[in-house]
Picture 1 (cartoon, rainbow, N blue to C red):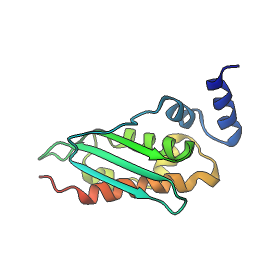
Picture 2 (picture 1 turned 90 degrees about the vertical axis):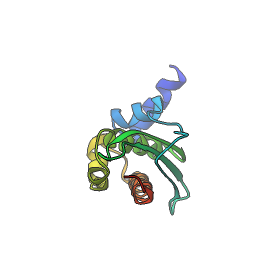
Picture 3 (picture 1 turned 90 degrees about the horizontal axis):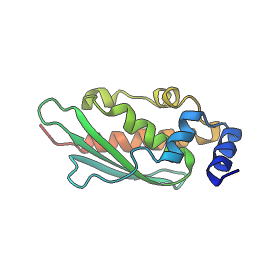
Picture 4 (picture 1 turned 120 degrees about the horizontal axis):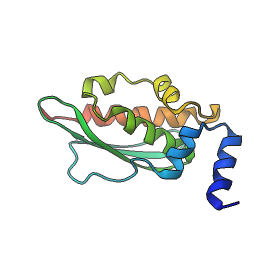
Amino acid sequence: MSGKEDIKNLLKRSGYSSTAIEYFIEKVNVGKIEDHDAYFVYTGPCGDTMEIFLTIEPGSKVIKDAKFQAIGCAGAFASGSAITEMIKGKTVEEAKKIEEEDIIDWLGDIPKQKIHCVCLAKKTLKFALDEYKGG
């Protein structure tokens, strides 16, 4: 069995959905946007840290691109990938309405002890959107 398969099996046994596992393995939307329009870095009570970078179309306020970086566990990476996928193509106002349950539903499932990772992604996005000053 390959290392990647071992990780997938371990995460599956831990309660992660196939979507959450793929997001973690493939590092979906992990990275930086140098010329971002909105940005925030937040450290949650668990010690995990997430940064969110957004490119937002002036006028329409549609989120064109979203990337994140994290220092944390598989749950933090899956949650960051999910939220950045969810908001692409949405307006800033639509993105502000995303709740933790929406992220969990998008992922399909996440271990109960990792719900704080979903909260970390939601709070980091909220703070990044609050920082957005664009037209």
